[in-house]
Length: 372
Ligand SMILES: *Cc1c(COP(=O)(O)O)cnc(C)c1O
Image (cartoon, rainbow, N blue to C red; front, side, top):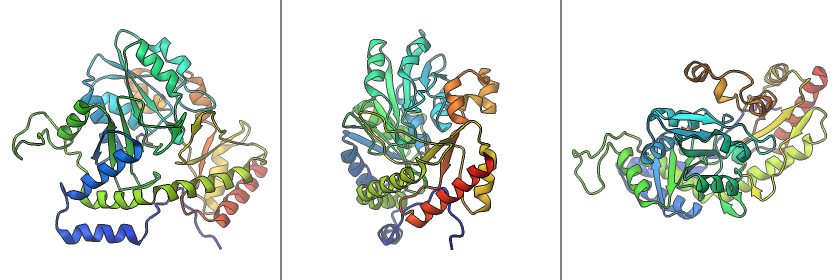
């Protein structure tokens, strides 16, 4: 009997527990060797020169915006179909997020809609690899080059995703990864700023640590910084998760493939398609429901069967605060809104068992049958 199936679940074993216990025993709970080890491993995994650990993906995005010197009066072009933190990070520094609509298949920012949004104020493009699907980076980098714009990658959902054989997070001037418990790997809370740019890296390291310089004193502050440091327990957890990452990504892909097989023949359900030249890193498992299906009812019926689902993701521009601040309204980004109103995230986690996948698919089929 299956009682409840959560939307996500971390994949934690004895190794993680022992590593965290060792840190606790050591007495060094912050600013220790584990953060450095985690950063080194992560930089080499992604293939960048520098990685700076921070205590959330949001903090990492904020540091990128700040390190690039973006400020009031500047505009940054980004996707309205994302977790809200990607756009918020721009607003933290007083700059303005300017949305460009998404592509119906990639669900990422549509490169063909970027140039019409460029003004004299535009300074950067913040590309979000949503659901672990890499953006069309060739096109985005070409536009950026032509207009002298910086590119930041929000790779928070895309660890080890690939575009034309190259890892997400290696295209822009800086990129950010995240380790909240629903991500592919977790540190409880945490993030990583990756870059090949020495200046951005040192700015990120200074700003995450109250504006302290690496070689300066504890009570000497060169900038108005933040406490965005990752603690040692989290870093130790991260190190163990990284050791398992290859296996984790393979297991997640296998779960996704089983879902695909089961769901591709269910009427009313569209599975996310494969996009040429790219390799998705499986973050969430999202389907699209036909317009005539009452998504709310499906969610309720699945909930009654113990199955958690969610509407990933509502458009950022239609969040109450964005409507209030920028005057956005329904119809502004029709593709995003159409996608948004049809998506449903199903339970998805590394260790998801076949019987759990089958159970979800069976109950989904019944719920759709009732709604048709
Ligand atoms: C998870 C995530 C973030 C960062 O989230 P935190 O909870 O702050 O770590 C940013 N952008 C996207 C697209 C995400 O999915």
